[in-house]
Image (cartoon, rainbow, N blue to C red; front, side, top):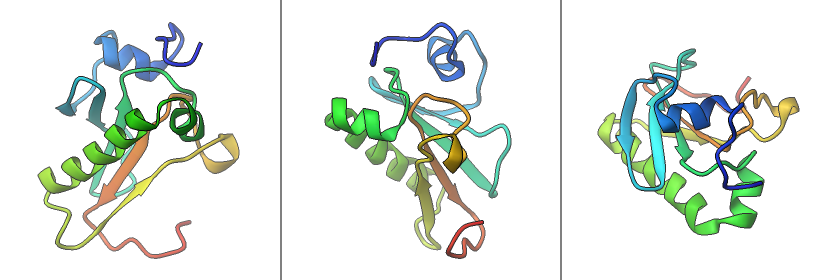
Length: 119
């Protein structure tokens, strides 16, 4: 069920502390942590504490929580001093788009030139 923790979800396990992560920010509704396979000098994931399989499901079921994730992405960028040179916030939705963990999450990427379109 959407919103409920999933025992087989890596990110749900990070939320509960059962899987370690380098946490950079936490709120009542979100957790932000460093990606273990960074694609830029700064690569932080921002996830809702509640489980939703992807960004579309999160936005449809809990738009206020989706807004929390986006707000925290901005806070991460500020904390990481990315604002002056720009940063990217990416939601991969579906395996064809590169989503590998099916718990909604935003990638905050910065610290180098980020040309468009991405690879």
